Image (tube, rainbow, N blue to C red; front, side, top):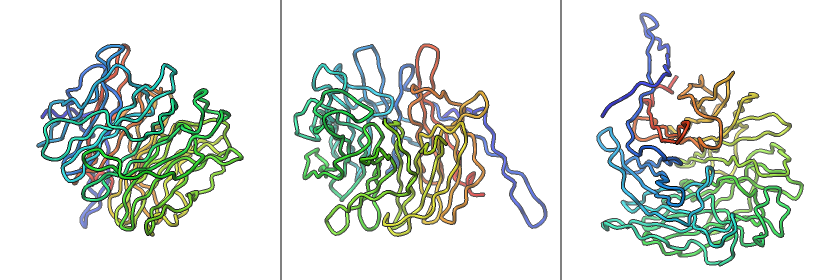
Length: 407
């Protein structure tokens, strides 16, 4: 494995009994073999650290691939599926998740010539099998509308839980971020077996923001789903719903930011859970003041603490979160400082404290850079992002030891 030190150095002062000794951590890059034209990375921590991504060998062909981290290096890319009729989008990207050795991923497949008519198609690799099963339907409404922004988690020992934004009630007239079409976007959830069968699906909220990512996690009391809500007065704050004793709760707003916006900001929340601890991160620009916020729950998402808020004129959002333990986590976001944009990360805790933000890498602020990924695997914090070049894109991955965030 060749480790390349990025042009970012992190110095932390650690006190000892005798004197203060500086300890320096370098963000180290993991060489990644996907090559030119790769983008949309997703990290998932299971028995191994997984990464999935999309490559475009030509204007018409898209390939979804994945790799594992083994002995400190990425394995050679393995294809999941490919196609010429996909909807490939900077904000609505494939997932990958593992459960007991079985894998699940998805792509968005066009259902009609209209730009925003596409369906979610699942791919599964059941444990012990060598070939992916592709093209499995997640929904069967057969409307030529939008379906996407999927999040997936391991649920039972033999199934996954998958949530998505569903446009079956929008009428398919157009993709209208202002929400003035024939109907509203909704959010649904389904349980999917390891061989790709949908066991049940259910409506969670009949009116949501159109184009923000959904996010899911499993607490000790059951699963939670977070997403950007949309009220009749166009307030688009972050909401949560929980499966409690076999029933999904009425959605509740995590914190009333009061962001009134007539269109979708395409900047969804992220959630992580460990036991009864839940950490949610999100972007808001209520009052024309961009912020990223992070809030903890100690009761499996029933209530949340006052958010930790980081505001700056350069905040872009595109957050991610990971839990260190039941009282603290690591969060990341994009922020422009001066004439450069950075992927930033920091430790946060349930007492409302945020550690010194660390600049992980310089990053392109445009849509082409997508949504950077953060994942904790063992004692190491991993990052993945899309690097935008003059002619093409490529994926970069890097890591820091967990202790770099334990100030």
